[in-house]
Amino acid sequence: MKDKDNFIYPYIPNSLPEFKQSMMREIGINEVDELYQDIPKELRFKGKMNLPKPLHSEMDLKRHMEEILSKNRTCEENVSFLGAGCWRHYVPAICDEINSRAEFLTAYAGEPYEDHGRFQALFEYESMMAELVDMDVVNVPTYDGAQAAATSLRMASRITRRKEVLIAGAIHPERLLVIKNYLNPDIKVISVNYDKVSGQVDLEDLKQKVSSKTAAIYFENPTYFGCIECQGENISRIAHKEGALMVTFVDPISLGVIAPPSHYGADIVCGDIQPLGIHMNYGGGCGGFIATRDEEKFVMEYPSRLFGITRTVVEGEWGFGDVAYERTSFAKREEGKEFVGTAAALWGITAGVYLALMGPQGMKDIGKTIMQKAQYAARKLSAINGVKAPLHDAPYFKEFVVDFNATGITVEEVNNALLKEGIFGGKDLSREFPSLGQSALYCITEVHSKNDIDHLVETLNEILTR
Image (cartoon, rainbow, N blue to C red; front, side, top):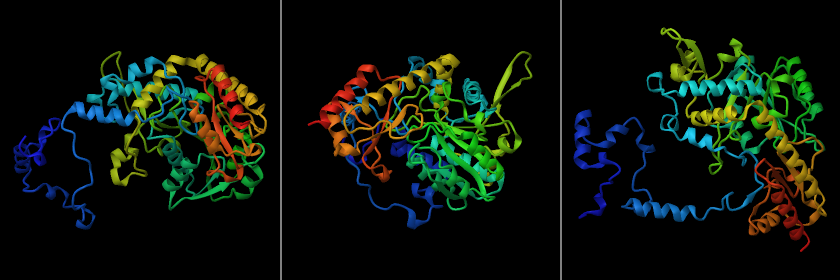
């Protein structure tokens, strides 16, 4: 190669100068910059980006990436008790086998003529998800649970024509930031206190803040602290008395043992499907769902795609496609009520595979297993001198707060010491919830064995008695 500055990448044949010139002539331009003339000049980047020199061979690129990845500390090499929005659950091999098929791997959007079964797979997912949450309508997965929560609240605002929402204080802080950003500036977010003893919604504070301006009351069940909200019916009555809707964010894997929000008055149910057969991917692997009753006032406010089933002109055949497509921004574009972009359709198909594999009894079994293991872990941790687990009195699922305040050691120090022993400790809550002091959120799922939990307890005991 004579001129390295004009290196032609073998993976991008269009970068050959003669190909570029040919394409520019075809579309009637002389310079590539003409394609960006709609972007104001002051917004265009000028100069060269500070990027490392390109790697000219696939082998060098592979080696470079492997060196970077080798720095990671994974959950395969360590035992993880981290959760807080992205949890380690067992992923059956069939989930990876199905979602790696070419016709599904690129399952983003598309149209029926290049569907290859995606529409039917997503319809089946929606049907099983609707059965799990005991609602009639479920959408194609949104980007993640936070987007689903924010969209649910915007739907509630449009339905009620009100501009205030009440949000329970025991919410995932990052999810709250997404919600505020999504609702800003036209919908006001009002925080409702949580009871410091139980970890549940403070009903008295809720009653004082709800009004005729309230579009929705939102709470998470389980809460960010892992507490099961047992006051759902009371919250529903408070909301509906003022003409507001109740929006509940739920962990779908809990619904084998905990009643779905629809049973205690939820109008809109949302959540994240990451626990349903989807690997943790550097905090990703997320997909949000929204579920409602089959009523026009709800259905027509969904901004995302809904797939239905209908008879075709061919006898004995069924077709799968969009329901009320005209309500979406895909059809209305800039005139849509709410714009929807990236979907997580692949994860919807994966969750569908997981739900089909587990069935009702499997979901019950895994929920029961998680609750039993979490209770065992909390009991063992609480036996350590100076440690209280769980911190709150409410029943809990999968996660619970561990109080280290009486030990005289910070959570950061505890977690650093655990990491040296191959253990990822609980999420440090001292910055997000300073009122809790030195407390951490621990996560126990079906992947944790009795030996894993006992090893954690023994290691913690050694760290705290040094």
